[in-house]
Amino acid sequence: MQTLCGLFGMSRQAWYDEQKRQDKDDLQTGLLLAEVRRLRIDLPSIGIDVLLYQLTDFRQQHGIKIGRDKLANLLRDNGLLIVKRRRCVKTTWSHHRYFKYRTGGPA
Image (cartoon, rainbow, N blue to C red; front, side, top):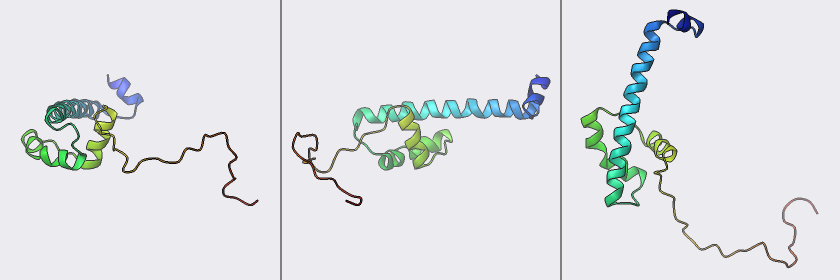
């Protein structure tokens, strides 16, 4: 193990510390995702800001420190991010067979 760690330029202790850190992060991520899934059952269209607020007590109990952006990235990676609805109807359809004028650039 010492030879392998030497090839990567780290000590054995640093490697084991990194393994512990990764295991802790994986456990916290799993707990957080399970709680988000549980909350999404009751309120399926809840946003990140409200979700982060509702997770405050849960995060304090489990010692999880995570911010809004990191939570958003975590949910996006696991397919739990809510897709925003469009505010207005799209009325332009440019794939018709009629003549279209060029836009932008010099004539």
